[in-house]
Image (cartoon, rainbow, N blue to C red; front, side):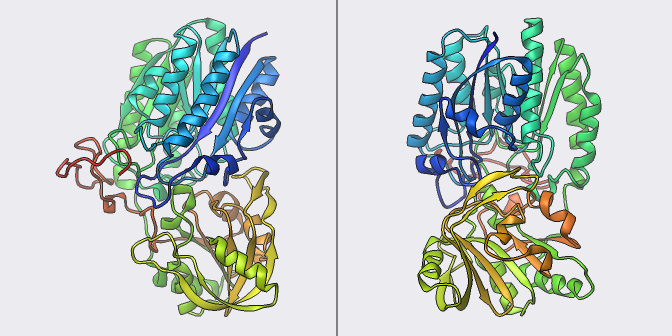
Amino acid sequence: MTRIAVAGFLHETNTFAPTKATYEDFVHGGGWPAMATGGDVLKVMHSINVGLAGFAGEAKNNGWELVPTISCGATPSAHVTKDAYERIVKVMVDGITAAGPLDAVYLDLHGAMVTEHLDDGEGEVLRRVREVIGHDVPLVASLDLHANVTPQMMEQADALIAYRKYPHVDMAETGRAAAKHLALLLKTKQKFAKAFRQLPFLIPISWQCTNDQPTKGIYEKLAAMQSEAVPTLSFAPGFPAADFEHCGPSVFAYGRTQGDADAAADALAKIVTGHEDDFDGRIFAPDEGVRYAMELSKTASKPIVIADTQDNPGAGGDSDTTGMLRALVRNEAKRAAIGVIYDPASAKAAHEAGAGATITLAIGGKSGIPGDAPYHETFVVEKLSDGRFIAPGPFYGGRDMEMGPSACLRIGDVRVVVGSHKAQLADQSMYRYVGIEPTAQAILVNKSSVHFRADFEPIAEKLLICAAPGAMPADPATLPWTRLRPGIRIKPNGPAFAKSRLPSSATG
């Protein structure tokens, strides 16, 4: 029987964010399943939307024996601590080493991990795994669409395969694609030629959404370009908040010959760069966006949904800034809700006061984001929750959520979801678990950038993007870059980066 070692280790690192990812963050998981090791990995990896679950399902169909080592992920944040990284990778590598003879290894990775001591977290994971399995055993990995792919990642892996949808409703599908590519490698016993191209400008995440152009059309063309000669082709728009040399978009292809791979990578790179002018759109200031939403809601039959994009915990924000909450209250918005504000102390105070109580709190604003502060006000505690629920929408895909003690707080006609753990609001259940029916609201403000669209677009009259203070600027050109590769444009048609300042350390 074909024996394949598998593992998952996922983190998207915003090096400008306020909070690092500790080992305990990976144990809990945040929006990811909780850490599992050994045989427990496969118990949690079934019928949910993650790469390893998709790979495991395809492996079962192929009759492969899987040897699981570890699976974990943490909510995007600043650097992964050295302690967390080394402990997790040790379990992974030791498990692979102890597995005995293997036919292949599959890793479910993100592709944009920066640690306290390493710029290229995934490149080093792949290097260490390659060191113990040798060069003859195939090593395949699935990656997030936001991967900042590096030369070392390309060198160490026999294939990297990235998601093609943002919102990432195809994580499990990408795991299945990785299994299918691995089946080709095992059948032919030959490795494919590789081609890798890094692209010349950063792409803001709000305009990477594959529901819209130009990205939708790019992926349609990418799919049409795959063939027997080029069985696997990927475009990773990148995560434009990691201050290191290889941050940015890339394309990578695997072909029967080097000529096949090079031709496909060059053609796809040309398509993407030809759309540089199109990676752009309207972003509202908080008051401007709220007032526009209020005007639209007068005649709307469904909610106006606003993305609080710069405090997206799926991009490194702490999900606790108060700019959009202040705008809702200041403009006296009606039937409005915002969530999830991460504030364990306020959630605890609400639980101590009890449902129906009126309490004065300083909500959010504790992550130290410039231009933000805790919001001191008096709220009514409408409903309490232990934070346990299932998120059945297409992004989370039926995942068990653990938001910790949570509450619905009301001020005027504005309701606030307050939780004790961070996860981006990408599922309608993240309102319902504290008693808010999202379809009954006139305005919803989600701390998310794009993932929320998978579950909210069908119930929304219109989607807006607002930029209140937060750790993930909608415009990457506003970030204080010091370590990008010289010449890359820091936004589409923007200025080229030049090393005019002293480089920061990896822990900058």
